Length: 109
Image (cartoon, rainbow, N blue to C red; front, side):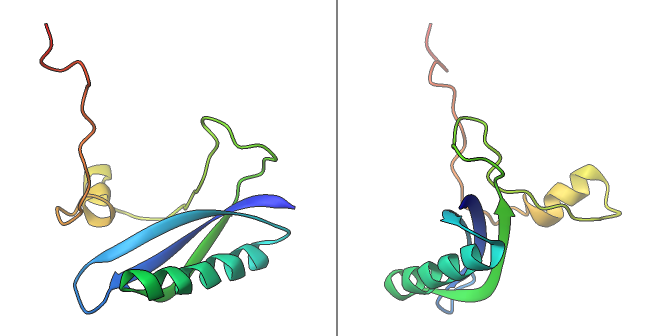
């Protein structure tokens, strides 16, 4: 048995809101990890108002023990875009909802 992460994509009802979830699974193969994640994804969708879109991508963590710095997911994509354009196109479109990391000491003297 190995650890796998699986990324599944969801849509919030008929809203223009999408969610990418990465979950961890202990299983014997990519296929089994995806089956487990999809089953959980359907359950999650049924209780959260999201619709599972049928896309699951698995990653073998290649470790027996999780620790700080363990790579949890990796996806390599070929693109001719410049780095800043790539980030804007795929990760920072301006429509993401996320919190900004803040320095806990900011503003303290």
